[in-house]
Length: 601
Image (cartoon, rainbow, N blue to C red):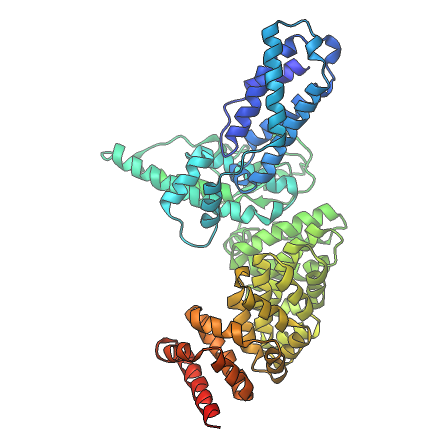
């Protein structure tokens, strides 16, 4: 068995993608073990070495078939897996008395050398590609991506052609199916990056076509439709590809006819379907659209009845699909609920028509009920789906009327970090409506938001700060925030600006200082030195907020005015009164006048 597994590893194609080096190294080491495997006793077919080689084969296959974008984004985790497999083979060789086998001396030496290589690989991993990590971080922002940057990423990931993009989209969708939702909350980011890379490839293909086929019009070609773009049932180019529970993709109208005929299996694999809902294959649909555009092909008209045409214009799901989703949300099956909430999360993020149709189908009360789920992933999907639905103004009232706010606050207290972050963002979205500010504050949201402000991820801290700022427009919430001890945390952000929260801290302190209780607590926290430093060296917006806070303190207490003067802020205030924003100029001039009055007193 070990020899057969090693032969399977040797037959694997050359590795591609960001993990090609650890793949190639592992494959090469296994091939170098071939002479040892030829001399293994027959009784060794089920040894730890056989299990370790099986683990190596499985990891190499998973890497070959998996998403290259996922491998780049989670490089550390994958490198740990390779180190673990190398360690497993090293320990298996430790337990194998190969020096007693009747092998030539040169074979003994080769095996010993490979053994030591596995040992080193089990305790040391190459660091992830720093440049690739930086490029990915920039490409995943909302900023328009530099074509040169996308080309560099495409080269590192070895995603060069439309066929590569198709395989990557399949790998991403297989991840969604296998995890019944969105693994690690990253699929949206991965799909967005894939679209940017795909657009870059299409642009480059257009440029190449222009250079090589100037005399031929692209509209007069008759390209062969890639098999991956054809429906397995009709063999026609797909217009509305959807995924069934087996993971296969079909044209919606074709698979719906199959299901309506009473079939409960996947037409291609004959695998029983665990459910009959159809998930839109957005990535493949986009790839088909781009391919058609590049080849001058017009997509076929969608053959639907009038009701389905109306639904198709308004939503990515037809009426039957939405009914199925709602039934799965009501189901007592936790896996079904998790998957359905995950689908709604993605659909609601996609466009406004989906948000309207999902809400009209009755999803909001069902999602609110899932906020109390014992399954963390279901809870995360539910609160994020509500966040995405709340983007549509008319849905905000429905969410609040479904008694969602107390449950969202509870999720904010006890959920996972990503769930807490999305709960904070949901509360911010709902608090845009003034009466909701009162309801959210009264539900006890301020203390857990402050906790997230202190111990959240960078994104979580900013979500919490934004939500608190919006809530504190209402005076009662300012009092709640001050009593919950927010001022000391905000001052810590000013004293230690390396945490990246100085902008948010100053904005919050500016609004809290307008409250009498807030002003007293801020004045007691030795605010003058950090405020003076910001006025001297901060950004225009931060200097403006720092001057506004300082003016509120000085106008209420002459001692604060004298302390600011003693800290040497006068020159900075004079400069700010001439070059700052309009508000900064007014505040700086007012503080200088207070200092003049204090000197004359």
